[in-house]
Image (cartoon, helix red, strand yellow):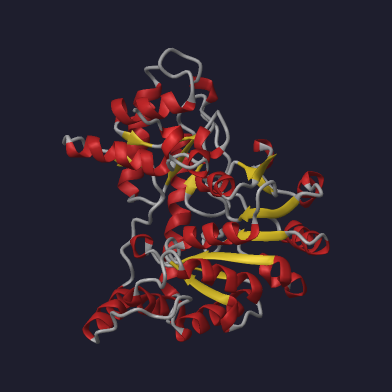
Length: 396
């Protein structure tokens, strides 16, 4: 008797797809293994090494035999340091038991969605969106309510648009600011209105603050700063991009004790505690000098300005100006619909195999006319990568 995927696997696993950025990374790895030299504008990963004082803290932890299980939600001194760092930078007022440390920011998001969103609950998701948002919502049985944004307005999210999308079934709103993939930043006035509106209507705002310290507008803003509405705010934080710690898998959540306790309970039956020495390294990251963050942010601004200048040299390609994060989201619609490049996905595949330039097609983020490029790479690679793109597009 033969079996099929539908008869063996659960319904919930069929609701999600393989992460597009991870798929691109895997395909690029195959070409690299064949000896091709690629310019990697694909998966967003800082080109910086993890700062030395963070690495030293992990080494000390290993040498001190700090290698056993810890409490599920993270060692107390780390959670204390996280809430103190957030309070110092954003004037928030979380307590230690309103924080859980997780194996990466993605797990914080996953656990938050799992404990808050039930079958049929609606979650408002602005477009373009980070690739994993919709899948995690759908895995929980929730319904994604896509909220289009206007490219001419820099994909800006407004309180008016959010309010218009709310229905009686709305359970949560996801805000990613600065955003992946377009680098958009929600204005302070809109952010405050959204948070207060959600609080009034008993809706949770999930704040993906992965890139919050890579905000180039001159003002760091968190939706959790409006403390009178904190009952309906969940901060989803990550050390990956801020401190160049992607492979360490270090994230956290801040929120009401009821929600954080539920997330910890779920974590106790899945990953359990985060790697012990990673917690010590993370403690050094958030508690010690933040000079490394300022240095990296300054370099990202230079890289952003350079890649925008170079992309403008390619006829037909337009691009919004990111206000944060480390991605550009160029519109390549002038080149789509042609043989072998009917879609952004086909175009990205040809860029990879013919120009050896790694990008991520816009379909992964909910739009059809774009590709995403990260500029968190060496300055020389930006020049080389755009040179290859110019030569490639000239042949289409």
